[in-house]
Image 1: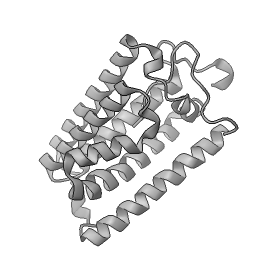
Image 2 (image 1 turned 120 degrees about the vertical axis):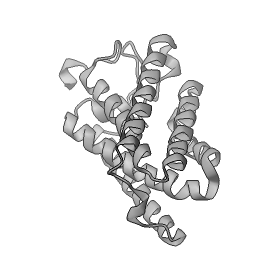
Image 3 (image 1 turned 180 degrees about the horizontal axis):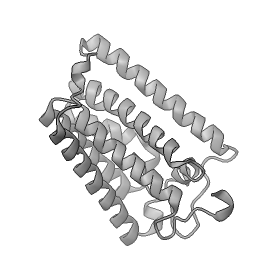
Length: 204
């Protein structure tokens, strides 16, 4: 899940010495590891099957899209009303997306949504249930833990994604919602459409 960087040009620039390219490669490595773990866990659960997905049910797409847009709206609202320091993740998301094309952002969002939903809602939720999975999902996104507002929102969104899976019996609506959240937030960061989050012209 992506969140907002500090407004007013004061966001930190992530870990010292880590280039944007290394940050991107780290993202890919992490997500492919998540995907591998998901496949392993689902295999040992005896649940690694195409039945995890139902793509032809329009209602699942619609509900997933609605949840995704609601989550985006809440994040935008928080960015407008809360102090910037409560939303700062150290500038990581800005560095990830400021130079990416919209197509690249869409690919990143697709990879993250499929990998994380397979692992957390697909495999882990089978063991821990919605609330245990939501807690673990929030803790894994450790850079948000310093900011109670974003950590709380992440927990609620995770629980909502878990409910979607329980309700539908498939990962499809959760993947759709997760994709929309990550893609829209990434695109807004890239396009500088949120006050205080404009990408510097020399970084565009």
